[in-house]
Image 1 (cartoon, one colour):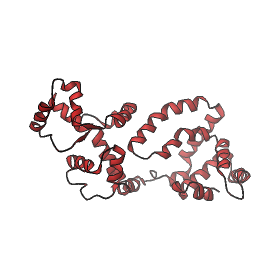
Image 2 (cartoon, one colour; image 1 turned 90 degrees about the vertical axis):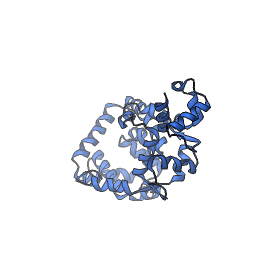
Image 3 (cartoon, one colour; image 1 turned 45 degrees about the vertical axis):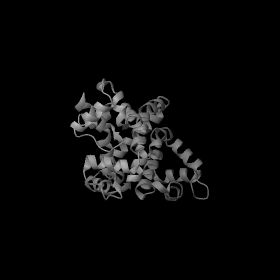
Image 4 (tube, one colour; image 1 turned 135 degrees about the vertical axis):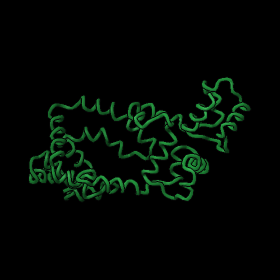
Length: 267
């Protein structure tokens, strides 16, 4: 029913799996495949759902408000913007759910109940029926970005990024033209988390972590002198201490985790 719509309107996210899952949702909502086809056909123009038709269908399925919660995630362009959007989901969800009536909430619960028992949907999901290993392998090997894009996202030049990569990963990324999704997250986490930090730090206070990415990820070495933990140091003594700790380098800018390492050794 939705193949034409998905291919023409949402080509970027097109996949037979997505089409089939959405078809199954319409059948769950309207009770049968025949009833679902009748509803979709009534909303189509010349056999194709327009944007307006799709909006009307989402409303009939009680998915328009649910979609409003997560739709901004489709526009995420990187690590930093991902966490910016994640900080907005909770308050957005509270606001949306507060405006839903009992019928809408009951239908969403009905969807979830059917997702758990529907064999067609279960077979299509990548993490079901022993498919998780293949899914993780796909993530591990997917070429999704490059050094140029990572440097631009962070707000530094490629030369500085290469120095950061060499500091943390030695020569591992020297000749890497493409960075996989797994490597990308590994790199960004190494830049933004200290050894004392754990991934649960992100989960427990995602707002603070998002703010760190936005305002505390990149530093000039001279900015260390403004940190209250290094009170009393001047440029000369800072340089001497960096040399002693073997932390000095030709990097004009350093990431959050290196800044914290330096301060930890000198304070």
